[in-house]
Length: 372
Image (cartoon, rainbow, N blue to C red; front, side, top):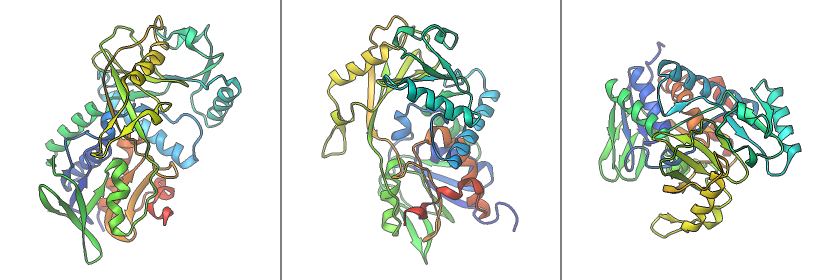
């Protein structure tokens, strides 16, 4: 069997970074690809992700290896386009809440894996980024100089251009969709507003809705997706370069001299409405921006320009869910909390699996059937 002989026509369901990345890789490899999305591209979780490129902290060895491969692919893209303002590798800082022992334990774990990890304090943090407000630091913090960030809406726009240039088709505003099954195999996608799309293979990459889409196929994927929020600041001149993950705010640079901010301490303040929308008291947003402002420059509060709220994709056990459904041959899934870090590598590995039928060993522990 020659490469690319198994699947020639693929429908990708989902307009976030995982769906777009895989569609691009498939089109490059010679498949006829149609990407179908419920609303506009990047309107879901990819449009409100902090998108910190990292493998910091503790996780399983296979997950760490996959994330490191994911960062490697971004470095390749960065090497080809070093002047992009939406993909940078300027490092990151993190620390635990009043817990020097916890921070040092995390540092030791990272060092044991060969991860680039250094301890800094208020007197040395300026060597990491002089724009960090040193007085905001705990007694000790971790600097990870190999980490970076990406603006997923900008990445999606870049990849969609590549996808279309390779002959791929993009269908937006198709409404909710389901997988068509014929004789026990996936045979395409049926959408509410744009009809049916017949294909040899289907990829379901619908973020937190992925388990819901495959449930009618008799497939159970545990879903632990919480509600989250990403806030974008007004234009500011603080010049921050590093990503910061701290007990009260996570913050990164953003194109247009803005900052992107999120965290999880305010999850209980988010209100879910019957029509599927979410809202939050602006006072909570303002408090988050106070916390974020303390991290940078003179520590004055940041002002919020806009914020987006919605479900953050998190599988029930925290590990990625990737690959073909045994119960429905020809139907593949991609569902992970690490959509930003893993987007490029998963697009590559899924393309190989979908077009050749060969299972990649790096995905062996992430198969959907573990929840059966």
